[in-house]
Image 1 (cartoon, rainbow, N blue to C red):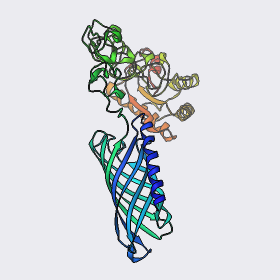
Image 2: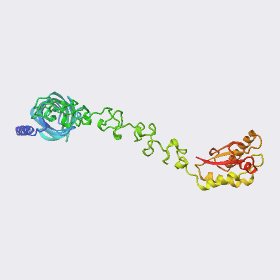
Image 3: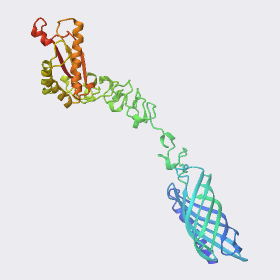
Image 4: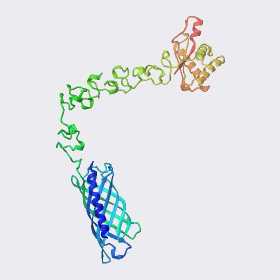
Length: 439
């Protein structure tokens, strides 16, 4: 047993110098602690719940912000069956730190953690064990923490298990680069851009350079060294605060957009307000900022068919094909009525059926029917008759399956003559129903 203790001391002696030698980034620390072991298991009632007080020592290394590696050697004296037995255990594993920047700040004073690992325990003979537990550290001062933890040691052959309660110190090894401040300016060398020259926090530890315009941007980095400006804009001024320096701002006194040279675009259509003919309605660049819903080149405010692509010469509406024009023109003269009545003559049915076919073939068409008379008789009677005739034509077309909502019909009486009412031929032309396609 004395040989085992001697080997343990040699192991500890070998570890400690190594810690000092590898302290480049202050990642290494030494754990020194006292502990109490409480046993259970089936090794005999004589050791059930016996407590043994011992000491432990071992290294610990920073792996990343969430994990540390550790190793530890513990030595106890246990009174077992009236024999004074040296109990040794060695284990190594990982600590999962809760002060990892996700749960608690890495620089927190209180540092809880979870542990798990593997090792061996020697109580009369050597056993493999699995230790796991939890604990915490509390920073006493820079480079020195108080450590308290509890670990359950599961011996694989179940001969005995034990719970170890530990209290001790964690001592950071070597020079603490996180704490070293060579120039005494309050900024640790590891964060100091000028560790040998006292400076300011604003300059990351470097002395304040020449700043002619006192805008916080040194002349060596200031694109406008004689004009106070913003550090985010290379030290140049931005009067309207839109992120475009005044010398490059096309609208320096109006809050605007960087992408548009500092000029505003109220409706967000990519056309600056000063060139936008519809500044409050999002439109297209090609139509000077005005909307064109059907993309036919005619802006909505001037488009009679804003939702159906058309042509400019027809005010944004589709051009009526020649067949439709011919049928409507023929129907103008081909539709006739019984004298003085709103009854359509049978001879007119063919012309009206052609109109029905056109309306069924062009779902976007709407039909406007306008009834007229000559000036013979009373104006009021003529107005009523013209209205009845226009509606009689509407009814005929609707009865053939065309939605009546697509047809408007109104009489205008003697208004808008197309020929001379002083001749029989002229009066015949004036007695008519006009057909007009709308959208």
